[in-house]
Image (cartoon, rainbow, N blue to C red; front, top):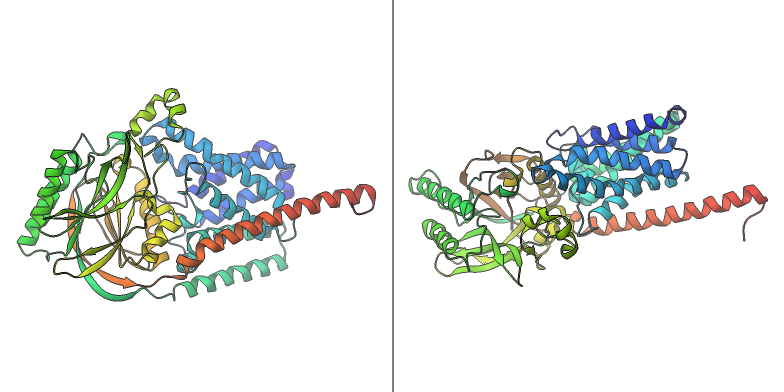
Length: 518
């Protein structure tokens, strides 16, 4: 296979790389054809192996990345087409680097293992750099419905990405030199991964210590681009209207009275402490329900032209009791890196508004329920989901129930919403906890501790209900193992690559001089 590709025109290899990138993106939601993911990984490796030089492999990686991202994050054009093209251009550079690394890794005897480590290293990097990273399209997220998903409670999303890449490299290894030995080794590795996945499903759900009745409210939003939540205070009025409908059903005996009610990120688009009308609407919600509400708000400050996205625990008598400030903020969505430099060049960035300032504390709020019972609520706000340690902190800091508050109104009608819900499902299985998702306009719902979906609410429309959530304690191995394991894979792979470069230079000296370099 590699020899055949090497003999073909470079344009054919480029076309295969682009098609492989697109095929890999089809493994992600809203398509969900997960078997294409390891096949797309394998196809990139095969064309890289056929490249004559590292420079050619770099170009093939770039082309693969463009195909992968143009389809995978096409929803970004709902904001601006320029935003999509800029993000694709930037993130594709990481896959150009990946192409080069795969070519270097191919010099070693155990290149399939090292190549999988290269994938882990590139995911590790683009999930953190630049500007806090964009860890959205990680291979592990696409595999939540695959038999491999069982490894999530053991080694987390990072570990699942590595194993998915390893399977792809095994396919490429087998295709590059078909033999009985390669088939046996590849089958053995696949079987071992299957055993690990099966063992992962034996990780118990967190120990149940009680239960709590939780109301949820999806107010609905106009949707569509930067004005997705509507004119000022529209989102707050929508959620007040749905709160009234929920309370009417509770009063009629159709639903039980909840211990507290969760509303989404962007329940308000203004600070209820400084905007009198927003404060009045929030007070109306709280008074109508008569139980604590947990709502997502925009806060002014802490400095001039700054804001924070926060979740407030709000009592109908005393107002705000506790808060969590979103830690994972979106570059060019919630803040503009290099703002003084870029804003004059790209005036559209003014739509981002005031600069968001991230929080620093874990999303685990100790609160008091009606009747005096205490509870620690684990919370993530939207983009928090893509940061492993932010997710793990919700249970490491003692979260007994897990909620996700989000605002996807800008992306209604795009695949972003399904992609985020799939990420949330992966996190539920990773933590082995139920997760209640509450959004402005979809998809709200309840995810079981095994990653399956208990229910979802209709997109676009207002919806509400009451669910019973188990209060749980305990951590999965992923919460303490996944991040150190990922770092170890990255470091060991980097060292192996450096050693291969050294070995390659020494081999070249031996060939030309007939003796080992000193």
